[in-house]
Amino acid sequence: MSETKAATGPLRRRIFAGPKLRALRASFALKQSDMAARLGISVSYLSQLESDDRPLTPALLEILARDFPLDWQDLEEDAATRRFAALREAAADPLFASPLTADQLARIAEQQPALADQFVQLHAAYRNAGQRLQIIDEAMGADQSSGSRLPWEEVRDWFHNAGNYVDILDRAAESLGDRLRGTHATPAREALELYLRNALSVSLVYAAEASLRDYDAEMGHLILDGAQPIESQRFQLAHQLSALALKNEISSVVESAGLRTAAARQLLSVGLANYAAGALLMPYARFRAEARTVRHDIDRLRQCFGVSFEQACHRLSTLQRPSARGVPFFFCRVDMAGNITKRHSATRLQFARFGGACPLWIVHEAVAIPDRILVQLAETPDGVRYVSMAKGLVKASGSYDRTPRRYAVALGCEVDHAREFVYADGLDLTSARAATRIGISCRICPRGDCDQRAFPPSDRDILVDPDRRDVVPYRLA
Image: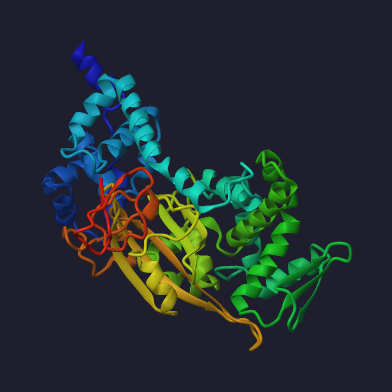
């Protein structure tokens, strides 16, 4: 009975993946000896695996999923392997001092599936409980006297809950972008202009000191600010083209969003047109493939697709198509005052919704040093480490009379994906002292020994000793 179960159970079934394993090794230009060393097996064993003479074991699946998370994700496609993957991720939380082995996890997932599911749910509840303090931070950091969210807050949270990926719109924009790009990597400005004029009957002019984009729907007339950088002009063209050509798709998403106010629905329409513009200029499959080729080097991506640094960063944060996910990144934009004006995270890192982020985070330094890329290895209080890249940007106003906009963008991933992130090169990812110990915001950060703390956490009492003074004039109870 046990032998039958071992042969037919969901995780004990014989998984042969020789061609996929060979293709994976070839994509990284690894010799069999190099790949065998990475997997901790002999060359002859690897040869048998690649020839489908032997099946993969749970331990090997664990190593492949850990070391090649993007390349190996398609294997985890049925209920049993999804359960194993979810259990593996939950059990890898730094709060557990002694993680379970792959074989132990496989046995639990196979023999006690209900227990495994409940463990995963319990871990998710634990993480959600930790994030509940952000609600306190939100209430203390914003005017909540009305008891309801503002329209822009509704839209921000809608995108966050959608995972910053809108499938129907992304695929439609990708298809349209592929038709318009011709032999180029991305649609040229002339192709966008031609489509607007011929397919959508929109007249177009560039004017000095105009609004960034001014469209008269009744006349079908579009005015763009000619002083904008060429990347901004292309984006505004793509926005207007998407708003018109994908009107039905945008409307269907807005109608199903369940937003309370007309202003929120209008803001979502604008946000979705911006989203579609990014997908139009950086079609999903081509952008994802190129991003992996250049290891997410933003400067190379923006040159290839003719977009701005910020646009390329933002697009990377949307690559979460279920069948072809990209690296799970967090992305944010921070102004000179430390306010987070854009934010999304496909990682375990969640931003404070109001006010500034942790002052130890590299993005604050980047704001003051424009046009220079800074990198940082950071560790949050839960023990998770992230590689962050930040760059200060200055958006020219086109006139001496108008102050240019200064801000910084940040993009980062968990260290598990550092091999895919060129900005991790040169960082010591293993040293216990190499990471900067950051938090989310002071109100929800539990660190009791931080010299940069602005105020105590909301859920802790403080102890004040009149006869002793450190950098922070109190201790946490």
